[in-house]
Image (cartoon, rainbow, N blue to C red; front, side):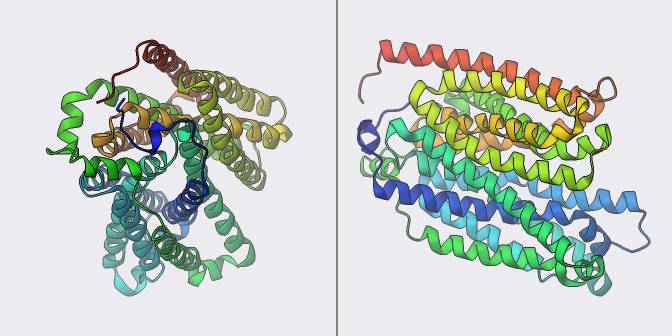
Length: 439
C-alpha cells in the first residue's frame, strides 16, 4: 500500500462539501452510464426479433441476441486495460469523462439503428459494434470511478466513497428495470416492437450526455496531481509494472471480484428467473422482488462502505460474507417453503449483497497509486469476464443435483471471501504495528 503526501494523508480531516459534491456527481454519472449498458438486457427478446431474419428459429434468435449482449462483456477487459493505461499516465479525470462519452454515443445510436427489415445483416453488425464500444466504455468506467472517488476523499472515508459509487452503479440497474417496466406497461407489444423499444436507448443517450456535462465540473484527483508534481508517474507500461511487481495482489483482487460477481449475478440477476421455474412464482411477483432486492443493494453498498471505514476492510468483508451466505440460504429455503415470502427475503438478500461495496475499497487500497488504475482495472475486468461468464453456466449445471445450487454456489464463494478477509485483517494489524516509513 502506497503512501503519498496528499489530502489523503490527513485522515482526520472532515469530509468537505467538495468531497460530497464529487461523490454525488460521480455516483449519478455512474448510475446513468450503467443504465445505458444494462438497458439492452431488458429488450433482448424484441431486439432478437427485429435484428435477425424472421424465419430464424426462436432459440437461435435468442442465442444471437444474448451473444450481442455478451459482446459488451467480452470488450470490457480490453477497454479497461487501454483506458487504465492512460488513466495512470495522463490523468484519472480525462478517462473518467471519456468513458461516459463512449457509452452515451453508442446508446443513442442504438436507438436510431435501422432493423433487419430495412438494412439486413448490416443492422446486426452495427449493433454488435456499438455493444462492443459500450463494453469498452464500462470496462474503463467502473474501475476508473472507484479510483477517482477514493483518491478525492480522506483515507478514512475511502469505504464510503467506493460504497457510494457502487450504489450509484446498482441504482443504474434499478433505473433500467423501472424504465423497461414502464415501456412494457404503457405500450402494447406491437407499439414496443414498432418504436417503443427505442425510447429507453434514446433516453439513455440523453442521460449520458448529461453525465458528460456533469463530469466537466469535477477536478483531477489530489493523489494524481501529487504524483505528477513529484514526477512519480510510472514510466513503463503500467500493466507491465502491475504484473511484474504485484502478481499476488492481482490474484487476490480477482478472487474478491469473484465474491462480487457471485452476489450480483446469482442473487440479483439470476434469482428472479430461477424462482419462476423453481417455485412457480409469477413473472410480476419476481420482477417486484428483483426491484426490491436491487433497491436494498443500493442502500447496502453505502452501509457496508461506512462500516468498512469504521472497523476496517477485513472485518467488514468477513462479516458481510457470513451474512450473505446466511441470506442466500434464507432466500432459497424460505421461498421454497413459502413463495409469498419472496419479496421480504429478496430485500434482506439484497441488503447483504451490499458487501460488494467493500470489494473496491480493498482493491483500491491494495495497489500503489502509480499503477492503481491499471491494477484494479486488469484484475476486476478479467475476473468479471471470467467469473461473470461462467457463473450462470456453473449454477445451471449444479441445479441438476440440487434446487439449492444457487445458494450453495454463493456460500462456497463467501467462504473464500472470509479467508481473504482474515488475511486482510491480519495485514491491517501488521501494518498498524509496523507502519511503513514515509518515502
